[in-house]
Image (spheres, rainbow, N blue to C red):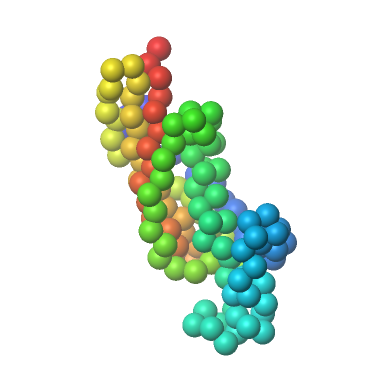
Length: 134
């Protein structure tokens, strides 16, 4: 792998059922995610997806690019930039920014982001994963 190599992208369409199921699994039942009447009176004007649900798209993206190494050695630092709504398509993309040789592995640093179908960035971040040297 070389620096500035573009990684395999992933696309997820956010559905009502994903948000409801995420609420159940996480215990986050904030009405901004679940109650349209409540959400209509907020700054967003409608229900929004959980930020952690969208972060899971980055984890899916990293797993598709680095497989088990992501699960065992991955780390992530992100910044939320915009809300995600039901039916938004989220494009997760990234590039390898740095490859640092360590004693018995190579530390890969990637720049990642999630954008909506209209190009609006919703999350940006940096990930790292360690690849064992053979």
